[in-house]
Length: 206
Image (cartoon, rainbow, N blue to C red; front, side, top):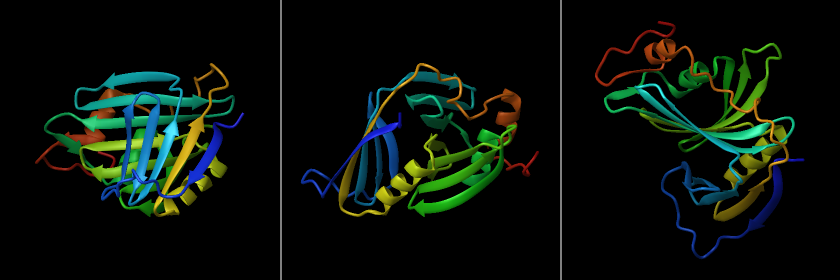
């Protein structure tokens, strides 16, 4: 069963307010909003599971949004603690978070960027990822959609003056394959990914 079960396209609705900034967020349970310029993507999701990771300098909220037998859609909201910021450019940060073999930037929409990752697993798994890269103190990541869904998402972001509605389905309780980010060992994440504001930014790999 496809994760994206239904798609509804409409023209500009009277209540749509033009967005001056790109964003990804979950204003309420069961709803994921993606916006860029005057395009708004509204996703209704069952939310299969929520997780919270506290690494002292980092807070990670993980939301498994929908699952099928082969893949699932995951939203991660990563925020630094007070006095900390990400050390590196967004591409390098994503590389560290996923321990990726390769990170390619495919397309950018303001502060929204589509990436294609190759993971360091035995299958060299490919991962499509949409990132909100608006701050050195936070990263919001949406990943797990296949190539067809990635093309639909890209086409949606290419639109102007539109509202698009998607509904996500859940067809299995198996979700061990969902989370692709790697938050261990803790000391490596703290030393490489984030540092204190005003401090010296370490060289890559140090």
